[in-house]
Image 1 (cartoon, rainbow, N blue to C red):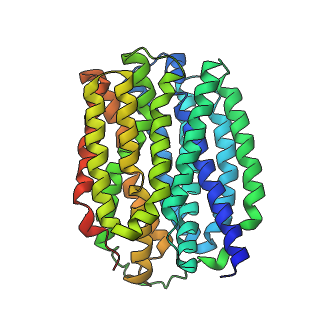
Image 2: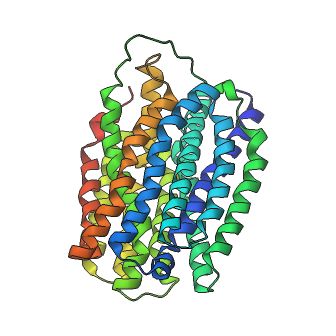
Length: 387
């Protein structure tokens, strides 16, 4: 691969990961405001957030196929433009029905961009023979950190959510156009399929990796959905302080992901996954037991550190396993989509489950569900081996 081509493609992927995190972070920081505006319960908010998760889940299958058929580069660009529009629409919270509908469109566009950028990142890894996916996901967390700050500051300054989303949406569109010419050629990761009378079974290991991703995704989604609400409604935090749990979560995600590739190379991905499970589950449990805004921020900080490398390492393992052990049976982009599909099912069941539990046993205790799921990662080592 030509060095200049590699640098251009790396920049395009980096910017897209940042955009993906930025729109998520700026949105979740305003969830307490949206909940107060709509005057809804935790359970109702959970059901509304389910709309976004359904949009994500329904997009994962076709996005993987589109990336395999047309190449991930054109899919990533079109998805980024779609996300810019979806972000702008999300800001007009007319009522609960519109909020749920706009969340569905938002989730659908977000997932298309997510699969495309991860597929392109995997292709870039294979062509350059360098491990980079963890750093790219660190860029997502950096975007989430910046988005959380933006949302928290806008909320504190009483700037409406609609104005915020119009600004963020316009920025996403601008960067998408700027990055368009910098992707690898579309044929860099196209995959030709041979039609067969009987479809081949997907490798079982992908489903297992997806299960671990499910626990990580549910927990990561919970950090965004409920941290601000827990601090504001349970511990009476201010508008900006209620954004701090997600900001802390994103900050440690950045730290963990920027060092994740180096640690995985030194100690091996399986060991890093197991260590992450221990750090995330124990740290979150301690933070919840402290029982204060400080405890929430502390718990979210350790959860971010523990989960920081889980999704990128699982995606990287899925793509590598498909390209080596199951070459010709499943495309790397499809392997990423399969693991993503199972993983992001956590985003589907997470919001309503935790929302209903929060109304029954209080949100603070409902958050012990992620504690248990993250602890399962301790046993993931044997399945993440790519050799």
